[in-house]
Image 1 (cartoon, helix red, strand yellow):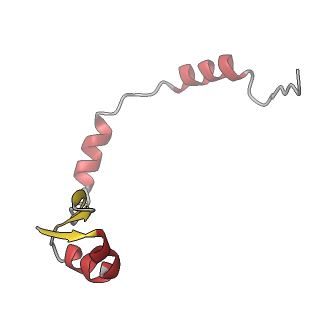
Image 2: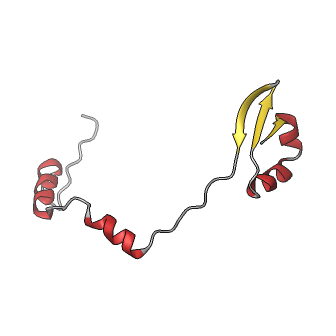
Length: 87
């Protein structure tokens, strides 16, 4: 890990970001106090189809009839919209 000042980061940001992309970590200081850390983020792993199916299987089941009834109770009948202006 390297310690650099805010001024150094500002002046050489492209080189610093290239180094971060290559795996280096930097701590940035302002007035001699560490205020930030720049480090590479981990690569996002793509899930396999089997993993996605397994995750889907544990989701809660949706009862669409109940959901529709609750929506109509809350919002009113399907297809009707009541607007009230300035009351």
